[in-house]
Image (tube, rainbow, N blue to C red):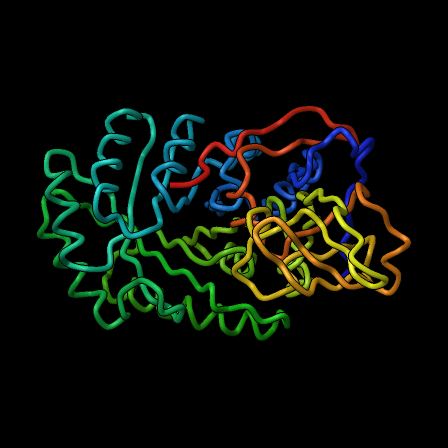
Length: 359
């Protein structure tokens, strides 16, 4: 699938490396997500991708009112924006338990919930919330093998949680991030299999009132149309080269790009750009960024502040030349920046703080 850059007037006004966001494309991606999910009430978007109060405000303005997050900082950002319903979808251990308790006291207008998947973690949470029970979702392992209960343990754990005075079981959570098939038919089959584990558990519990939260961006359009299920896309707001390549059926546009500059012409076939590990998510193998305007450029080495690329005629380029790149993985890339430069109709208009950067 071709990667479509958005135009940027006068790129020389920006430092490099920097992250640019097209506000119009963000709004359109949100609109498309709501349409694809069925309606706003079926979606519980994850904010780990953007981590920005400004984007949260756009999501709220579109009618979305339930959210998922991974850190107390993200939960705080959502509460400060007035989000009425926040699920901290991450094991709450150590000092984060106390942080959650303080958030709940500070923002009574926001309904907070958390995940549980272990008796010890459940007891610890219950002890803090005994006077005012916390809503919790049972986290089920649907194949990711990262967190969550095995399905056969869910029923006894559910009944155990009901013995704890500080917890109130309100839902089931299943994240099928392992489902990444490009073919939509195959992806749907695997997503159906993940959901079947959760639905069987809900039936065994005999509680149809339990909310089910499922999936991420690759499967949200599948899960979002199931009755009683909230789907949790996140990457859709900005999109990236990785998902764009894997999921051409999803109709999202690249809304965030990296601005970098040539800093050295090494030889006839080699350039160096100022786009190192500290500027783009580095957990994947090269390439970690693609350059649609320079498809012949192949990243061959990267260090903290440098990205070395090979191309047929490096001498045709010069130091200071601006390149725009699309990260393969946008979520951890955003976390590397304190703020992004916002473009509207190709022109720079403002900056957005990455409000919940870090933990």
